[in-house]
Amino acid sequence: MSIYDLGFNEHLEQFRIAQKLDSFDVGRVISEHKDRYIVKTPTKELNAELIGNLRFTANDRYDLPAVGDWVAFSEYDENKGLIHAIYPRHSIIERKAVGKAGQVQIIATNIDYGLIVQAVNRDFNLNRLERYLIICNASKVEPIIVLSKVDLINTTALETILTQIKSRINKVPIITVSSETIGYDTLKEVIKAGKTYCLLGSSGVGKSTILNNLSGKLQMKTGEISSSVNKGRHITSHRELIVLDTGGILIDNPGMREVGIADTTGGLEITFETILEYAQNCRYKDCTHTHEAGCAVLLAVESGDIDKDAYANFQKMEKEKHHFESSVQEKRKKDKKFGKLIKRVLKEKKKNKY
Image 1: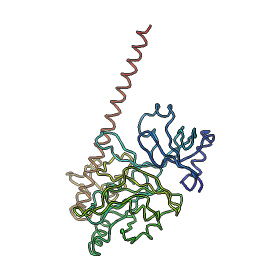
Image 2: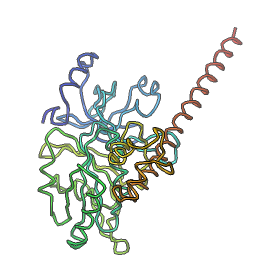
Image 3: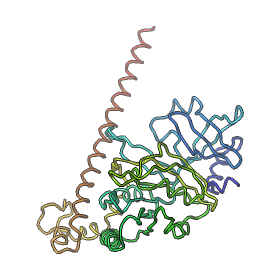
Image 4: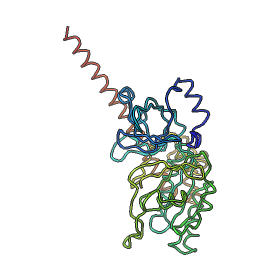
């Protein structure tokens, strides 16, 4: 195995040379636990921590390592290392942090494809599927929909679900799999060597089962199917990066109960492209698509050209997006005000000292 088998590329190599990081080793973060990280190289895995300067100069979560990051590190003891720098990221999958206004949670970085997993029995939810699509589109990550547990419903029910998806979502591949290994040959065909894939989905949808089937070995324990809710019990408790024998890199991810939108880069517009196309024909440029006369979107909803449920979900997430952006601006104002207060206190303290 070489560093390129872990997803390294020439762009990162050029950065390494330009920033004079060639005196350090290169590794990829495959797991994080608070302020501790497991860094993988072609030959070993190390327990690593940040050097003091990197930790204390971090302004926010983006300045700290996350699963999927490339880092420059030095080994100071057997299987122990110090992280000196983080390489540039080409993508960041993130969501709104639960219970923290204006803050984000980084799910994984340097992802090429997002495998959005939904079970077709009780978990399937088209609105939630669109939420995951927004996260992928905002992150410039190519989405692939994976419908799991297809053995738990009949063919007619599965066809109904596929029709529902295709009526609202275009240009996104759909792969169906089951715990009986149905569909895994098709899924393996989309896994490309050197590319990184992130499993996204709620608890119990079968992400660990998919990981085990793709890797051909028991990487993650899977829970028994609960007879009361007909879904697997949640097993994965943290993000972890695993290199498959086929050459692809897969990041497993704990199930997310909440999929809050932290979209400031156009993910919503890409996901609901059809609605935005109609919006270009609205009478008013600042049309909110809620009540205005001459709104092309509302006319399309009334005529059935735009799915009513898709429109309702778009409106809900549009409000959520604006609320998050407002929270971000408010947080920045508070941080700036607090920064000025600290400077003033330090200045007064210095003045009184003399």
